[in-house]
Length: 501
Picture 1 (cartoon, rainbow, N blue to C red):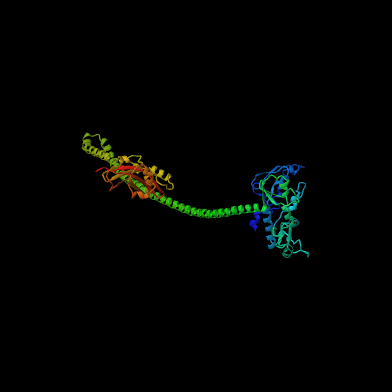
Picture 2 (cartoon, rainbow, N blue to C red):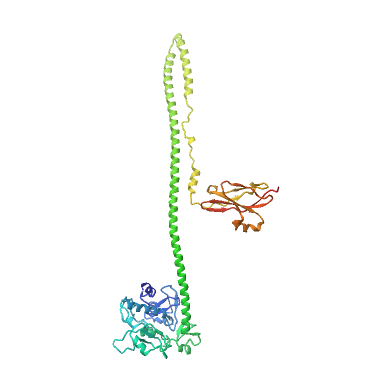
């Protein structure tokens, strides 16, 4: 019931519609609320009848009003009012209150016949009070019994007993229209808007409006196309039923589509989570590889450092020993040079001189040929290529289409060796070679659309392949397909011919 009431609620007063108007935009609005909208556009002491248009509060569509009739020129949504009446009766029978709009008053309040359309039991009850049941108008007892039917033709409500007694289902009452109990004020809502004493009994097709006989005879509808209410009722009912069936069908289709979309969303969530996990796993693997390689290269650097330092330490030790020996020899040679006695000098100088010469020669041999700025050139690091590869990390895409290099292809009388190239061989897992006998340019399209016509060589790892067992002097068409986990791409067809015997 709550869901139904929300569809029957006026967008202005947020209560159930009272005397609803059917706007040209297909939305509905309480007559009183529409009147208040016009009042809100009026200047001080200005008549509401001077307002010629207002906007639908739901869709902002501009509603044009007749200068002569104003809001009276708009159609009344009788079907909607009947639905509301049924909802109110259902609420009354279950004891659930329905909120109803309170009557409005003021200098510009609607005081015309439309106020007579407001049900007496609704206007007298406060919000939250269920509408009073419709009472039988023929009962002589006090209080009267509750009515079970209302005759639209007689405009009278009957209880079960009075209905059988005063309104039997036989002539002259067989043509009368019986409906669920309806307050007398609602029955007056079926009166003609232009001729208050006349009931509507036909439908103006031209103006799409309920009219009475006087409207057709002497009113502004006299030259319009009209139809019987029963005919229009059946036609509109069939149209509404058909449209409702289509809407229900479409709604079911949308519900099915929505279910598939929800399921697809769940698949997207699962697949995205799986791919995110795989990405983390692959990145962690790359990080582990980088860390392992860093440790290996760092170990090599440390090993080279140790070897160099060990060699340099040995050279330093040799130099220290040589310096110590040379220092002693230098001291002895200095003492010899101080000798002034020629005989004594000659006695020792020759030996000392030979030792100095030998020490000088041995010292020259000990001096290592080293660079004082050893930069470990043999341990040069250049990860430019690896950096570019890391920067180009992305999800895998299908490889680019390979290209058959006909100038590199060779043939014999029964074999053809096909060569091809690919711009991204790094991402290609394998190649597939397809070939068939070429019968003319016209059959290329049909060949490409029919796998049954091709001989297929799968799982080729190189950029070439030799096909054996071909017919001599025959032209063949070849297509190479590059394959990886993301998909496949095919080359443009190429034609090659075997040699004649």
